[in-house]
Image 1 (cartoon, rainbow, N blue to C red):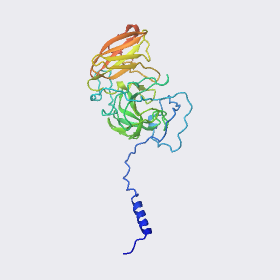
Image 2 (spheres, rainbow, N blue to C red; image 1 turned 90 degrees about the horizontal axis):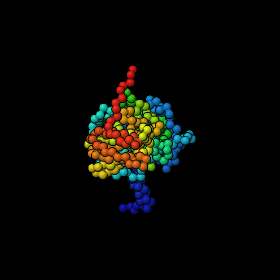
Image 3 (cartoon, one colour; image 1 turned 180 degrees about the vertical axis):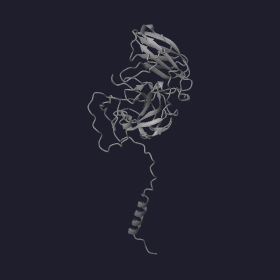
Image 4 (cartoon, rainbow, N blue to C red; image 1 turned 120 degrees about the horizontal axis):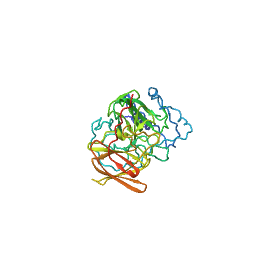
Length: 370
């Protein structure tokens, strides 16, 4: 037998090694590839200018691919928008299953939307970052609720409708990787309220699984939780918009998300003795059954709009049915009232300075004379 030379052995070894590096045949890409956030380090908070006319017409919104060029320059402007997240998710009680959607025990209720995150993860608003809260500066007002869930948690459509936006740039109405909402989805729903269109916003996403023009049903996957845009941690920023899609057309989502079975919602209007709305006033809530406590703050401002019927400036949803004590420290004097939260229902109250609390539904205004 002939001796194999050292050179031949080396050559054979190289051929075997290279053959192991050959990539297998790739499977075809799916019809829809999720949009991924850009690889970037920490960003400074950009100065952004909203479209005060309500943004571009929805028909003009598109999902133009992200530009390959460098991040576009942002005009210098004094308005800065930020949607913060606390460092840790709050410790909250387990929630039971939700009532069916839509849910309305009263003639003015409109719990039309399911939770955009399923119950295997926290799917309730962060207590410290509610609608109308003021963060960092007096002119930064939260126009939605934050739902804390780990990065990659599936996000689902809260109702049926048509996708109108699925990209960066929702705030400005044009593709912009530095947009404060980050990667976001906007849905125009098949139903409205009192003749007005309804929209929902899902912001700070990590990936998007839909495209503009696509129809979705309640529960359809539209993306995953992320931390794109101006945020300090992963969560879903969720908004409800009415009549038209704009940062200036939001409503409190806690009045639109269906409650858990057997739980209810506290809605109130805090005023001073003269009847003017109180902004930033703390309302302390304590369960007389479990001694659990909550603190919420009265909201207001040009970007915040109360419900047409309730005219509220404070909402606390997801309260187990039972008896609660309400306390407002007004002019260094604690004012106290007792209320009952009924399953699936709104409990409404007003507070008016030295006159204290009144627990009853608002009067129904007569229709305008034609």
